[in-house]
Length: 224
Picture 1 (cartoon, rainbow, N blue to C red):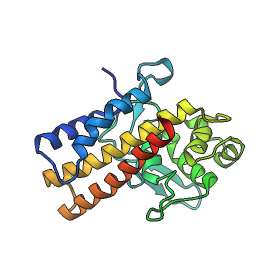
Picture 2: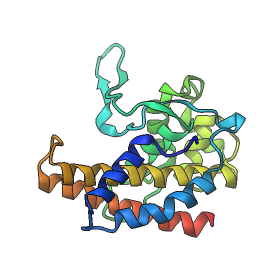
Picture 3: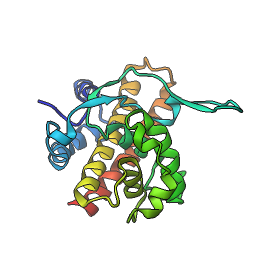
Picture 4: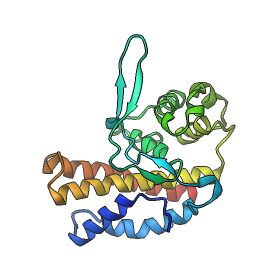
């Protein structure tokens, strides 16, 4: 059946289970939260949520700025994990990677919602060019948004406000994105075949594990 979570997440989870990864309780947490997140997100087959082409790895490392004095342009690279998915999946991955709503002191956070929205929406133009042509700062100002996520969704979808159901779906997608990144680190640790050293792989797992727990806690506090 269609699922909001990408296929590689389930493949990596199966690998971690098979290899009996136990340094962190990632497998146990995934088993607990994935059914809840799928339920919160709703069926992917809904008309408004028909599967779209998704990059699924839209993090800062895969966004390249061609800096030209005449016409600077953004390029999205590395389509290894691209597949059909929920239309807002890439936006959720990007927001998760940028910590759009993270106010903890140990992360790099942009507290200016309008500026953050402008930056993120510009790079998200691959899925919605119409929204990208809109002034993100103006949209964020006009939107009744109390969080960076709400401002981002208002700007990207050109909505006057973000409904609770939309915010809940988006928050669920962000948790899924954080789980996927955590599992990527786990696979790098276990497989030893990634282009990073073992210590770096473990550190990547730990960073995203902390983010995953925070996002899941926030999801429960705000959307349950």
